[in-house]
Amino acid sequence: MEERLREMAKQARAALEGAANLDELERVRARFLGRSGLLREIQQGIREIAEELRPQVGRLINETRQELESVLERRREKLESLGVHERGEESRIDVTLPGRSQYVAGRHPLLATLDDMLEIFLGLGYTIAEGPEVETYYYGFEALNYPPDHPAMDEQMTFYIEDDVLLRSQTSTVQIRVMESQEPPVRVVVPGRCFRRDTMDATHSHTFYQLEGLCVDEGITFADLKGTLLAFGRGMFGEETQVRFRPDFFPFTEPSAEFAVTCFACAGEGCRICKGTGWMELGGAGMVDPNVLAGVGYDTERYTGFAFGVGVERFAMNRYGIPDMRLLYSGDMRLLRQF
Image (cartoon, rainbow, N blue to C red; front, side, top):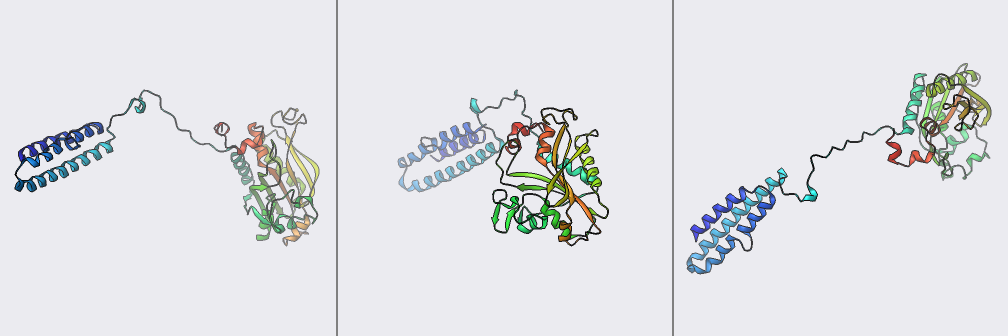
């Protein structure tokens, strides 16, 4: 029986170590170590030998089983690490298929537009300033010369967190913080998200991006404002672009103006994009109200300044021909993969 056991163990080791894949290894295991395997058959023959020899033979059988199971585990680990196993037809790799190219992400059209806008102002000598999106009533309205009964302060227009805490409705709040922290000259642009209680449609959103600019120094005039916005418009839409100002009202600028540029699509001839006017309205601007300058401690007899603000979404939509603002926030890869 011992001789038979040694011969079986030799055959089992050779078969286990020679298994070419996991399926073959399982067949070898079943043949030698399974419930109906050769080792089990030898074990059942113990009752046919002398009783005094049974402990010795039983010990040899257990040692042989442990040894073969160790060989089995080593071979299984090696085959699994090499990935050598039989695959079903449904899981086979067809090496003749063309490879799938990886998509390389591009810039989101909204942020790409904002980056280009900032690049223009950096070239004009401006710096970039940022501030909190959650503001106090003072920075959101009072410091910007809003009268206490201005409709923009209504709950219908502004998101209030508490009586004195709100989500900023414009990045003008950062202009006040900048002026509080430094003396003139001041030349900053302020990009960031703003929040208003607007109903979502093709041209409005409760959350949107805004870019505002502020320039304060000695001798700043309305002509400097127009020259700056002309340079900005030409940087975005081409050297043939012209700027138009029309009177408007904002609490924090006086005089104030709505500014527009010649339509980039029709060069001022009139089309469906500009509704036949030849002009594209972009935002508001004006000379900083002396009350605002005085509120941050500036000498209004010495310093003047201008400010302006534009919506970034409008630029992106016009620039890329996107008809609906909601597409910018949809996350739809059919749109985003185009950029």
